[in-house]
Every structure is written in C-alpha cells, then in structure tokens.
Image (cartoon, rainbow, N blue to C red; front, side, top):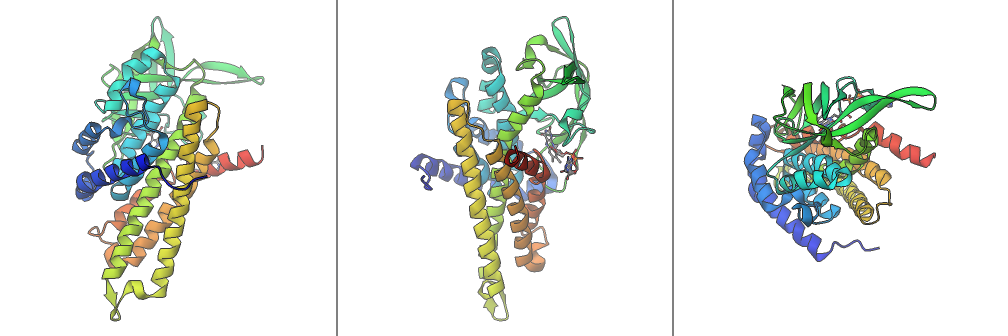
Amino acid sequence: MDFTLSKEHEMARSLFREFAEKEVKPLAIEVDETEEFPKETVAKMAKAGFMGIPIPKEYGGQGCDVLTYAICVEELAKVCGTTAVIVSAHTSLCCDPILTYGTEEQKQKYLPDLASGKKIGAFGLTEPGAGTDAQGQQTKAVLEGDEWVLNGSKIFITNGKEADVYVIFAITGMIEKRGRMTKEISAFIVEKGTPGFTFGTKEKKMGIRGSSTYELIFTDCRIPKENMLGQQGKGFGIAMHTLDGGRIGIAAQALGIGEGALDRTIAYVQERKQFGRAIGAFQNTQFQLADMATKAQAAQYMVYKAACTKDQYTKDHKTSYNVEAAMAKLYAAEMAMEVTTKAVQLHGGYGYTREYEVERMMRDAKITEIYEGTSEVQRMVISANLLK
Ligand SMILES: Cc1cc2nc3c(=O)[nH]c(=O)nc-3n(C[C@H](O)[C@H](O)[C@H](O)COP(=O)(O)OP(=O)(O)OC[C@H]3O[C@@H](n4cnc5c(N)ncnc54)[C@H](O)[C@@H]3O)c2cc1C
C-alpha cells in the first residue's frame, strides 16, 4: 500500500490546478449568475486534452488512468462545480459506455471526436416517471427495417442541447423473466440533429447553474440499426455499470467542492477579526476546521481508492468497483454538503452573500447527493453487498 501519488499524477494535478486557477476560477461567478454554459472554457479544456483523459490513445484520448481523470474533476470542482460536471458527464456517462460496450466501428466513429472535445457527450436515462426506479421508463424503440424508431422523452439531462452525442435508453420489447413479463431495455447512440430529436425545457436549478440540464424529446426519431449500443436487452446493465463509473466522477466533484470551500474558509478566518482577534483564534473555529479537513481527507482516500479499483477493472475486466464507487459518492457528497454548510457559517453574514463564493459551493454541493443515484441508492448498493 502506498498513499503517495506518483510523480505523473502530481504533475497532472499541477496542470489541472493551474488551468482551474487561470481559466475557470475567474469566470465561476459569472457562469453561476448568467446560468450560461461555459462554451469557451470547454473549448480550452478540449485543447488541453481534458475531454478524453481516460480514453486510450488509439481512440484519440490521453490514455491516462481513472485516477488522473478523478484528479482533474476534483481540481476543477475546487473552483467551479459546473465545469467539473461537464467533464464528468461527458467522460463517464458518454465516452465510457461507448468505449466499454461499443463495436470497433462505433468506437472509431464516435470516440476520437469525443476525446478531442470536438463533440460533447451526454447520457439520457431518467424520465419524469422513472428516476430512482430507472426500470419504470416509457421511451420506446421499435425496429422498422434498418432503423430504430424512438418515441418518448428524458428529463434532467446534463450537457443537454450542448452535447452532440447521446447515450439513450429505451424499451425494445417485453420479455419473460421468472414467469413475469418485464421490459426489455436497450441502449442507443443518438446524434444531435437527427430528425425527431428535439429539446424541451431547460431546468432552472439551485446550483451548478452553468451546466445545461435539458429535457430530450423523441418523436418518431429514426436512427440507424447499427446505433444500438451493446446487445439488445442489455441496456439496463449498461446503464447501471456506466453509473458505477460515473459515481466516481461525481464523488470527485463533491470532493473538490468540499476542498474548495475549506480552502476559502481557512483563508477567511485568518483575515476576519472580531473581539480584537482573528476568528481563527477561537477554538470553535479551529475545531470546525479540523472536522472539515478530516472529512475531506477521508473522502479523498475513498475517491482515489474507487478510481484505482476501476483502473484495475480496466486491466482485468473482472474487478468490481460498484461498492467502492457507491461508498465514495455517498461519503464525498455528504462531506461536501457538511463542509460547505460549515464554510458559510464560518463566513458569517458575508458567507450568505454572493460575493463570497461559499454560498455557491453550498448550492453546488447539494446536487452531488442526488444525481447519478441519490444517497439512498448508494446505501442500497452498499447494504445489498453486505447482506448478499
Ligand atoms: C441537475 C441534474 C442533472 C441530472 N443529470 C442527469 C443525466 O445527465 N442523465 C440522467 O439520466 N439523469 C440525470 N439526472 C437525474 C437524476 O439522476 C435523478 O434526479 C435522480 O436519480 C433521482 O431521481 P428522481 O429525481 O426521479 O427522484 P425520485 O426517484 O422520485 O426520488 C425522490 C426521493 O425518494 C427517494 N427514493 C426513491 N426510491 C426509493 C427507495 N426505493 N428507497 C428509499 N428511497 C427512495 C430518493 O432517494 C429521493 O430522496 C439529473 C438530475 C438533476 C437534478
């Protein structure tokens, strides 16, 4: 066991940190206020190779490990939760399933443009009636000749409208399972611009406001037969396996948000004076900081462990990482919520104003407990493993 990062990982971290400080931090307030997708920053991230970190070089990516990718998301989230989730949804939820389940043809067709950031990716599973119960979905795909015809809608899709490539789940029939008829779910790759594929409502959100969250609508949307991802009927497994990886990205986002809020709070309590002393001189402040730092450190180890376990899976295609990912996401998200809440408290009235960014971090932290499986879902995954 070795708790020190390799020289390569440290170098990658410095690169991500420098980019985050120089390119992302100065725009974070504006992105939150205007609720606009930071297109220019994404173009710069694409140029710097951030949109294809764990994609093998043969498909145009950086060929780095999952830990490097997690460190990138962490560093971005320290200054801007929005920018972090754009990278995370693109990489974990769109590139990864194409890499894992795509045919060689699909990988050649889609991955180079996604890895270079020329195209952005998204993942559409959730529906109005199917959130936690993802099997409750209604979107259908019917094979007509050489085309699948999609009808239905998806909600809350991160990178919606901005993305060019969407991994979409739909019902392709009914099958008998243990004497009961159940839905057969399959996965598809759908490109923006396909006739019959339009965008509905843009969500007005509490946090991660620059992240574009849209409804997707499919009305007799015809896609080529060869755009099915993986085997017919294996879609639910593909979605669940994809989310296991995605949870590492969200855990890294939560980790970064917590760490960013802690950094700002440490600086603030040393500056701000009351009763003739810095508020950092009060033992309550010190103990709060100690708890915040301890939890952030614990979260970091869990996130890195989950990333390394997924790296092992990439090598042997055997190692399971779903429990590590669930634990990392659960803990890091709850840490982010607790740490940002304490950060606002330690900033006093100023923490409640938009001038000090801890209020934004507190708003951004909340979503990490909800998307890519709520904290309750993570507890279900963890406890199911304990009781199996
Ligand atoms: C900003 C944002 C971005 C998102 N991005 C994407 C995306 O890119 N792609 C995508 O497909 N989806 C996305 N989602 C959807 C997200 O994953 C779901 O919102 C989430 O899984 C919860 O589903 P729900 O909102 O329908 O809540 P519900 O499933 O209705 O849950 C409501 C509450 O009930 C609890 N609950 C439900 N069932 C159980 C149970 N069996 N036991 C205990 N508690 C339970 C939940 O934990 C939660 O607390 C996004 C959502 C948001 C808000």
